[in-house]
Image 1: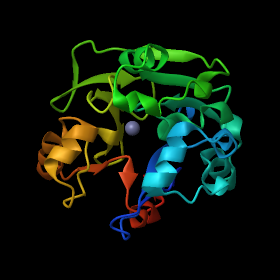
Image 2 (image 1 turned 90 degrees about the vertical axis):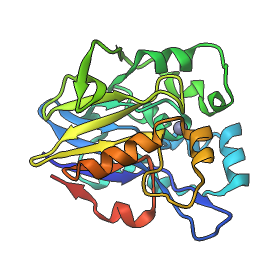
Image 3 (image 1 turned 180 degrees about the vertical axis):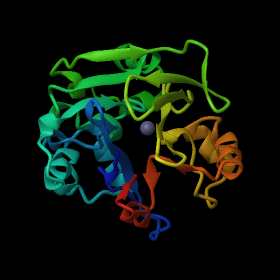
Length: 247
Ligand SMILES: [Zn+2]
C-alpha cells in the first residue's frame, strides 16, 4: 500500500510574503483500486473563473498552474484517470472538490451533513466556497453519518476500504467537514483537513477558530500524544510535499 501526497492548489500569502502553501490530496492504493482523498482544483477551474477564485487571487497569490490539476498528476504517476474508482471528500469547498468532473466515473464518499450543506441553501459565509458546477456531471454519492464508532477517542465512521480508512467528523469549518485517517504498515496517517493548522504557530488561535472551527487545540494535543500518527492539515507548506509517498 502506498499513499502519494499531491498538491492540487498552490495558494501563497501576500503578507507575509514567505508564507507559501499547497493543498493536500492523498492518492491511496487500496484493494478496491485507487482512492483519492480530496481533489484540489479541476481542469475546469482553470477555464471558468469563479467568484471565489477571483477573491483568492486578490487576497492571496495563486499561480494557477494547470499542471497542478490532480488528474494530470495521476497520469504522470502512470495511472489512468479511470483507475481512480473512489473519491473521499473531507468537505466540498472548491479547493477540495473542484477536480470531481475530471473523474466522472468515480464514486464519491462524503459525510451526509456536508452533502446536504453543499446542495442546500447557502447559510454561512464560508458557503461561498461551494461551487455547484463541481457535481453537475451527477456523480454517484455514498453518504455517511456516525453510528457510535471510534477511531482513537474521536467519533468516526469506517470507510469500506482496505487498508483501513476512517472518516473523522470535525464539524466547524463547514457544516459536515471530516478528517480522514489511513492505516499504514506501522501507525496511521491522519489528514485533519481544514479543521486546524497544527504546524502553524504564527496565526493567532482566535483567527484559526474563526475560519477553521474549534478543533485545533484538540488536534495539537492529539498529535503530541500520538507520535505513531503522522498528521497533516489540508494546507501545508511546500517542503512538506517533498515527501512524495508514504507506505
Ligand atoms: Zn475549506
